[in-house]
Image (cartoon, rainbow, N blue to C red; front, top):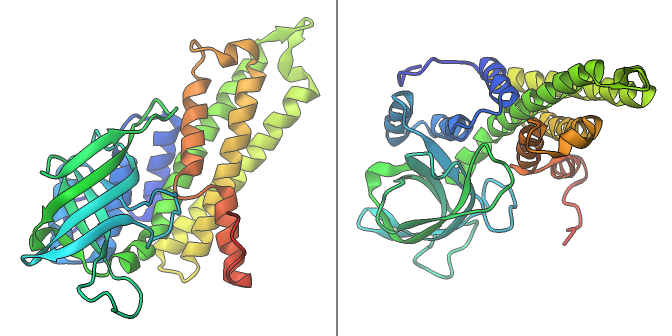
Length: 325
């Protein structure tokens, strides 16, 4: 709000993003929201300037993910080397959302220390890079979701001035923003799943087989009932996560991971059932369910699917688990 925005709390944002998912909106709103959370947590003068620009309509997307899709706040393949008060970036950022629709990227980079014997954990910086900056190249990823695009960004000696360095403790800032990012993706999943449920229910009322609506049969009714239960559970957990974020609760990360896990599972279930219960028409371009199926599949993978989230929750209790590699 201080930067000129609406000042929504997380609960309000969840309600908005649910509608975005319900309409499969082809917009860079969600990536820009995720970048906004990170800038807000940074709290620096540079972050404030970019927040003001976002409030004026500038689109920004996160470029913070490594090639493996580790989905961790300190996993990046971009390297920053100190240069004339700023940094010089090299390497690649992967899975960048709506990269061809935004105006700038919020990049996480690992600082290349001058001494190779530097002890301790690697230091990360967050910096904002204009989409048309010299030394930046976009390579479009081929994804199934038709409502957005995704790209790999290559940095080749790209110079970042000190004025665009948002934080010199990038991984910590990103970690604080992580619950809000997960909760936002969960809200989009809930909205898409709700559309799939409502549309399939209406279809089951009108499509007839054996002289009666197919919704009469238990093989149709039961999956739809299970879908409603799964969506309500996911939505409840998503709003709970939003409340934890708004109240600065220590349980925000746990709540957000639970929400993303439940929403991913609900989205997966309803995507499968909506296509199947529409019968043959459900597999065609003439039926809109494929838009939501593909959007939901994409959302599930973003920032870790349900299995990933449950693994992270288990590690909070049991400690590091054996790698599945």
